Image (tube, rainbow, N blue to C red; front, side):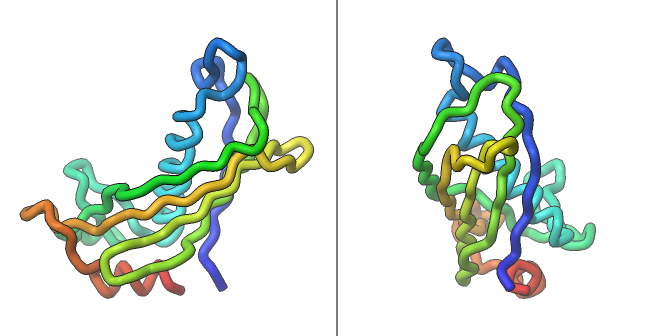
Length: 141
C-alpha cells in the first residue's frame, strides 16, 4: 500500500497576491510541508544542521529538491481550508518522488496537483548519495 499523508491548511492573508487568490509559489511551499510531514509520519526528521534522522538516529545525508512540477486547476482564496495529500510515488537508489493533490476542503474541488523529486546528498561532500537502507525501507513500506 502506498504511503500517504493528509493535512489541512488554512489560507492566510499573506498567502494571497493582489488578485486575492493564493500566490502560485505558496503551493510549492505547501508541497514542502507535505514532504516534511510525510517523512515525519515515518519517523524520519530533519536535524538543525539539515541532516536526516531515523528514529532520532542522525544520518550523514540530507534531501534536497531536484525538481518540482505544479498544475493549477482552480484558485484558492483567503480563509479557504484546503486539504493537502502527499504520497510517495517512487523510491530509487538516490531519489524519492512525491505526488501532491490540493483540494478545497468544503467541496473537494481540485485546486492543484503536482510532484517533486528529492535527491539524497552526502552532507560532507554535497554530492548525490544512495539513500540509507533503513530510511529507504521506511519509505517503501
